[in-house]
Length: 382
Image (cartoon, rainbow, N blue to C red; front, top):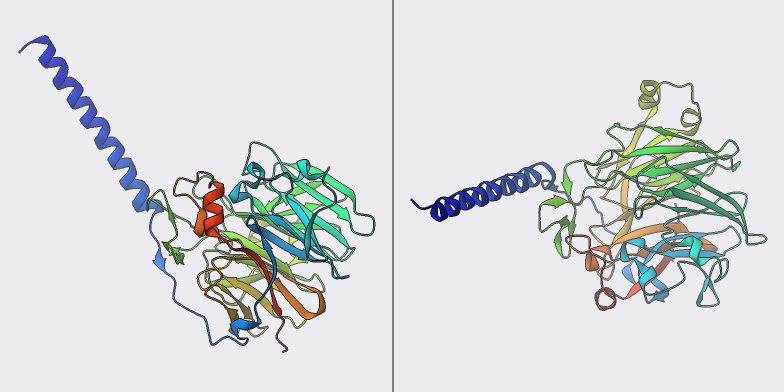
């Protein structure tokens, strides 16, 4: 056997061994992270016809979240998953007279790149969270006083992986944030932020209520998986909402079958043990696989239904009802109470443009995934 022949055989063995290692690694990922069962359809006959779902705004890029003030002002941002900064210089908007106006002004937009979570508190301040997980930067938390549109709070902290939804206590002293985690790389949890002292605590990490269950989200594009089926899109705690008095924080993990709530007094108590806080979590009722949630004045919790293009509600006794659904909605995302008894809903249409390898979609892909809309419908009476 010549030296060249031996070298070729060794190269072939080496390449074969490397291929076997890669194949084994991919198989391990698929078996470990690519599973999931189809979720049963828990929807009911809708209380409202699909024709009650009106278009408030049609946008050139996907909306992320939406919020409204007590005075009827409406705010929204663009979804960071679409990486909109490649096509626009504005990311946070107020809807005024049928048009999107950069909020608070065009000059501030560079500081709002990546904005996602929005909420208006009882003190009439618009709070914005810019997650750390999208770029190499700390999480940033901001608040604007809506009486002056001035920035009144700005803080950077490194307390989570992907802090993307938030709610603020009625006294304005505590911000609750949902950290969805990052698949197997970082666990989901809640973050409790003390505004006065600017301190953050991670709580309920490892609790079943904030962890994803073994479901695979079904979309019009098929099962929601990444890497051509290797990785199931499985998300932990995602939606948050407070009851009107601020006594309960409601939690909804996206890939989970149950809506739960936690006493805010327990969340704010740093002396409470992790075990005692975990014991304070209580189930409210079953829910669809969801994104945003919103409590209403009647004690019901509106829950988006990401598989069926609609919104459900969980009543105080735990009964699940479908409120509205539409074949035109791809991904029911952010939800908020709007002016004059309306409910606002963003259709971020994520499955229509998300790439299997999470590569940013082109402008043509985003246009094909449209129309990108903010919707509204009437809040059903009790």
